[in-house]
Image 1 (cartoon, rainbow, N blue to C red):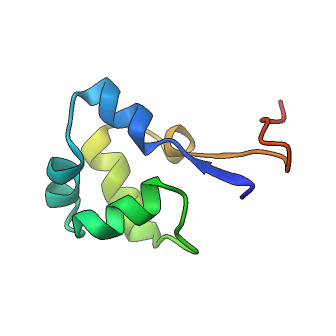
Image 2 (tube, one colour):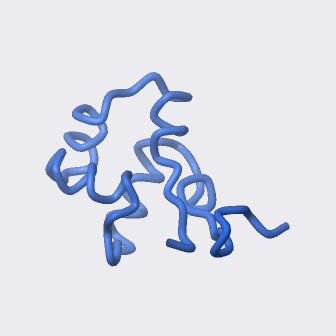
Length: 74
């Protein structure tokens, strides 16, 4: 998939568990797992905003584009 999700990176930086993040954002751990594993078809802006607020980051810290080879264009 050309969009890579780096929620794991931010979780590690913030020393936060998936369960805690899901709780603070207000989504189920299962839905957060779908998102963080790159299996989501879409994400609501409200959810993205809540993730950014809780993780104190920008959307670009959580999502990035990769070409079909899996490498980022820069």
